[in-house]
Structure formats: structure tokens, C-alpha cells
Image 1 (cartoon, rainbow, N blue to C red):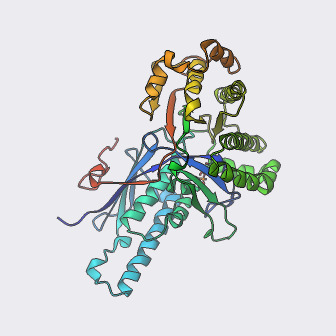
Image 2 (cartoon, helix red, strand yellow):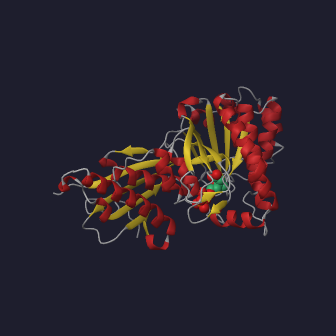
Image 3 (cartoon, rainbow, N blue to C red):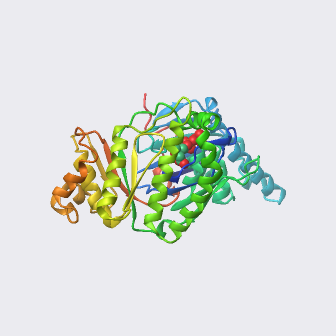
Amino acid sequence: MSAKYEATVTAPVNIAVIKYWGKRDSALILPTNSSLSVTLSQDHLSTRTTIRASPDFGKDRLWLNGVEEDIAASKRLINSITTARNLRAALEQKLLSEGAPAETVVPLSKWSLHVCSENNFPTAAGLASSASGYAALVKALGVLFDLPQSTSDLSRVARVGSGSACRSMFGGFVAWQAGVSDDGHDSFAVQVADRQHWPELQALILVASDKKKAISSTAGMQTTVETSELFAERVRSVVPKRMEAMQRAIAERDFGTFAEITMRDSNQFHAVCLDTYPPISYMNDISRSIVSLVHAFNAARGRVAAAYTYDAGPNAVIYALKDDMRDLVELVTYCFPRDDSTLLEAFYPNSFAIFDSADQVGQRLTRPEVAQLAETAGKFPPGSVRRIIHTEVGDGPRVLPDSESLLNDAGMPKHAKE
Ligand code: DP6
């Protein structure tokens, strides 16, 4: 049997605390402003991707969650695959020119690819599936092609697939430097702090909808750039100051500052969406009541103990320190009671105890206090929040062993859907 040239990886989701919104170059995906995000644990949210190269494959093919997609219809897929292939071709050239025997330099750059990718969360529901998807694609290509480029270099390749994907190439706290050049060489991701830096920081994801969003980020941000007057001010003066202050807050593990900037930046991003003409509105009644709830919680604590942030969809991500998470979960599950279909998922061994035992959760807030705070949000019918994920800061893309491959011996998806 001939050798198999294949790589399987997983890549994480990242949630921005300073938002990327707006491109100065749509083809190369160059942003109008820098942004900063937290990479979340892959134990709950990740994309797994297997890529195999073979001289026997007739053409490049890609399956997403078991369904074949048309690569030719996606400029972004073509751009990222072609960019990685060009890097491989350059490597093959270099090795040959340095005198490596031809039989040791496998011409992977000339072979077709089968790409198989699976998410463990709903696609396009505002949970950054394109970020983990393109990061997994590029990481797998980097491993398969044995590319010598650094992670920041490879983040440029992920960027041409989807802007926010460049930040999913690292774990921990990650900045995407906007850069100023026209060719994009200075627009890439860097790690600001690794995942161990702030172990007390946790995230609670509240999925208010798993429907596909009405206006994609790509289309929405383009209209914002063209029509919003507020947006220019954000790019010119607000974001640069926030990038600096946020990096300082992370370095000093200053949760109060981290949280306030996070909330303000989410609010401004959605304000800029409303200032877009015609306006774009991603948040719904549930999202807005979670905003009120978090502010009420912070007022009750007498300090900024939790921060919400929303991307291009109604789902909330709440950042809080471990010690405040119990009360927060209690509050959220009180306002948004579960029904039989609600999914509770937790990373921490004790999280299910938090969710399941009312006795344990009321350690700081008493039941009457919870009820009183909950009045600011209002009560919603059971099941309004469909999925609650309790997670933490996570690592960057992981390389998996061959046994975790998503492709069978023939190079076809193991879990194909009709
Ligand atoms: C609101 O990265 O999905 O999540 O570059 O067009 O693929 P494209 O957009 P995308 O935009 C993400 C926008 C955001 C904010 C953020 O993640 O920074």
C-alpha cells in the first residue's frame, strides 16, 4: 500500500472583546481596525478537519458536516487553499534546489485534496463557525504540507478565508493587527497572552437562536463601511485606544477594565450596525434582557463582575471570573428556565452540580435576591435559551492522530449525509 498523506486537526472558536467590523480590502480581507479576542476551549466548541492529498483524486473536494460543498463556488476557499499550495510549491522548489533527492520531495502541491470538516455546534448561528472552520483548514494544510511558516504567517492564510479566522490560529488572548500595507503582509494575528495566563477567566455562552443569521457578517460590515458615519469615528479614535487599554487589562488580569471595555465595544459595534443604512439589528429581546441582567448583577455585586458580548447574532457570551460564575448561572437559569430540549453543557467537572442543584448555587445570592434581580430581565418561556455552554479560555489548533481521521480508506467522508 502506498503512503497516506493526510492531516487531522481541530481548531477553536474565538469571541472578540474588541470587534472586527469593516474591511479596507474585501478580496484580501484586510480590516479597517485591529481587534482582540479570547480563544475558547475546544472541548465544547471546535471544528475538526481532515485533509488528504492523493495523485488518485480527480479534483479538490470538500465536505462540511457530511454534505459536499462546491469549492469552485467559494472564492475564499480557493484563496486559502491556493495560498497554502503556493507555499508548499515554494518549499518543494527550495528542497530540490538545495539538492534533496527528487524521490524524497513528495509533489503534494500538484495533487488534489479531499477536505472533510465537522463542527460540534450549529453553523452560522453567531458562534464563529467560519473562524474555527478556516483556522482548521489552514492548520491542516500547514501540517499536511509540512510548511515551515510561523503561526502568525499562517494566520494570514486563514485571514483570506475569513477575517476572524486568523485569531483562531492561537490559543489564549489574541490580537489581529490591522496593518497598513496594501498587500496585507502586516495584517496577521499575534498571541497577547497564553491560555494559562488568566485561569480564573470563564465564559458562559447562551444560545438564543440556532437559526442561520439573516445578514451575514461579510455583507453587513460592507454596508456599514459604506453608510455609517459613526463607524469612521470608531475606527479613527475609539478602537486604537481600546486596543491598548485592553492589552494592559489582560496583562494585569484587571477584570473590571477588561469587562467594561468588552461591554462598551459590543455595544458600540451594535450601535454602528444600527447606524448602518438600512440598519442592521442582530440582537433580539432575549439578548437585550441579558444585557440588563448583567448590569443588574454588576450593580448588586458593587463591581463589574460580568461582561456580555454579542457578535453578528443574538447569542450572548458572558465573561466572568470563576468565583462569580455560580451566581451568574443561577440567575440566567432562573430568568431563562429550561425545557426538555435545553442543552446544558459544561467544561468544569462541577458545572453540572451548579446547574442541577439549587442548594449549591445560592451561596452568595439568596433566592429572593435572584428573583429580584431577575425582574430587570423579565421572565421568558422555558426553552427561550436553547443551549448553555460553560467553558473557559482554550488552546490553539491541535494536531490529532490518524485514528481520528474523518476520511475512510478510499478518501471519502466516514459520516456522509445523503
Ligand atoms: C462580529 O470574520 O465572519 O464576529 O471576514 O467577512 O469572513 P469575514 O467576517 P467574519 O466577521 C466576524 C465579525 C464579528 C466580530 C469579530 O469576530 O471580531
